[in-house]
Image: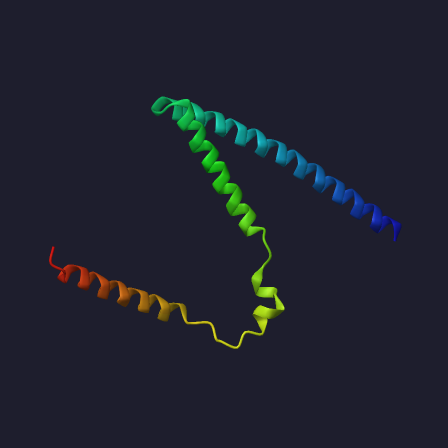
Length: 112
């Protein structure tokens, strides 16, 4: 029993160390790419605009990651008791296509 526990602890420590080292290298890579992007943006724009672009990019990526880390709505009990069937995605796509065609025809028939 103790041998198995010792092996599990050793394996966990090894995986944690490798993960920490990988995280350090990822952080260094992100820093280097940020500096490279900054220098490339400075060739075509001002420092203020370059800062806005990089800040917006990091903000967007961060918001996407936060959105993905949120709770999974499929496992909520209220969502599981829904009586309405999920609409067929192909039917929704066909309906959207036909609505777009109808709108385009109406816009084309308008007099300018």
